[in-house]
Image (cartoon, rainbow, N blue to C red; front, side, top):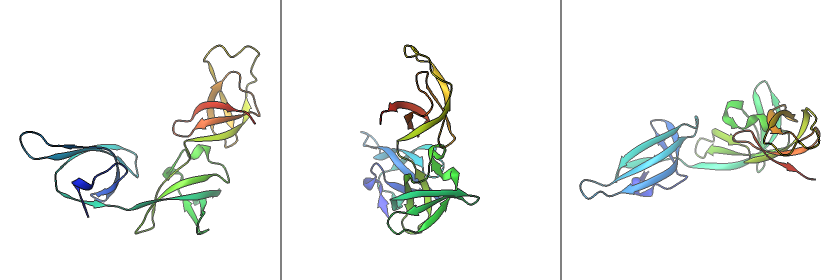
Length: 188
C-alpha cells in the first residue's frame, strides 16, 4: 500500500481493477482547505489518458510492473510468439497488446510489461524507431528532393508508410513505430 505522498512519475496504481501509470502529478496545498494531489495517468490496457484528483493522505494500491526484453519468433493463429531473453520461456501475445505491431519482424527485441505478482503480460512495445527495407515503391525521379511531397511505400513487414519522393525500392529507412512516420534514410 502506498499513499498520495508516494506518487511519482512511472508509478503504476490499481484503480477499480484497472492499471494506470502516472504520467504527471502535482501536490497542491491551497491557502484554504485540505491539500490534494492532481494526477494525469495513462491506462496500461487501453492507453487512454485519465485525469484524477486525490485527497492528501489516502491509500493507493501500487502495482509492481516489470519491464522485460522478449525476442519475436513467429506469428500463428494464437498470436505473436515471443521468447523471454532471460529464461528462454516462450509466450504468445495477442496483436492488440503490441504497440506498433505492423513494424514487427522476426528477431526483433521488444519490451514487455509484466505484472510482477501474477506474471500476466499487460502490454508490449517496440523500440521508438526501427530500420526496415523498402520492398515496393514507385521509382523516384532525379531532382525530386525540393518538395515535401510523400509517396506510399511498402516495407519488409508488409506495412505501408509514406516516404519522400527520392526514396527508392531496396533502400533502408528509419520509421517511428508510435505513429508510423518516416524519420530518415539509413546509409549502410
